[in-house]
Image 1 (cartoon, rainbow, N blue to C red):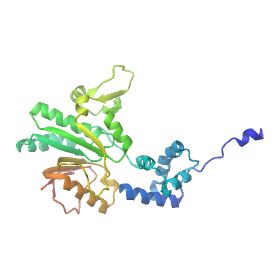
Image 2: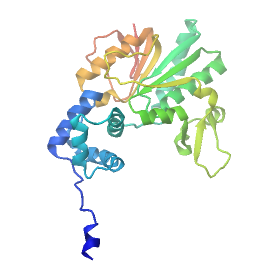
Image 3: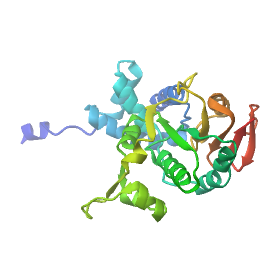
Image 4: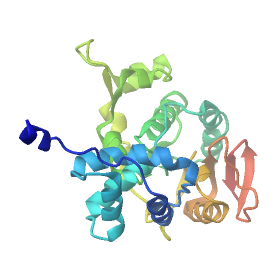
Length: 285
């Protein structure tokens, strides 16, 4: 009996110390620009438990010490940042942006005689925003002889990028997609019991995925772009970081190009070459 009891592992610590929280908060801020106030302690603990299990550590404290030691591999640092970043997204999220795209932005480019648009989903998460944009652009091109397009989708989270590349989602996640677009751009499973769908191959080919950290001093995305979606990410940054990111985004826009932010975001105090044309939609002048 004594031998059997000895084999039972002792309960491990499942909380993060204030010292480790402060150190991790500084690390997360430095790497991603995301603020992690003390009110997020419980959330951070929850995010780290999977990393503790997957890496065979005895406690959150041991895992924190490993991450902060400088001995963690780049792959583990990537997984750590994946775990602590927020990836809330939906198809046709903040739908009025897509309505404005159809009613104003695309006709503007059409009137200019532009036949190719380069678009960037700068915080693409799992690709739902980029594929929504692709559906809208493709439908406009078909129905109104609109411009052709290409879309770059970038994010910090490598797991989310892989989801976007596969283009496979729970069927219920596609509920906001209008039926006409769903019939054309979404592949339904042959087995009705399988509750997953896939974005059509022709649409997937129009979207390129890549890892990019908005904290970088330079955004190596190639040629300037016509439309940037960077929605619901600035809210996690402090004001100085917001201004730096918006400045760098602006540098990637062609004159006359459009920047779309999330509905709860603004560029108040920003002195760059942007003018508001609609709620949280800005044009480079």
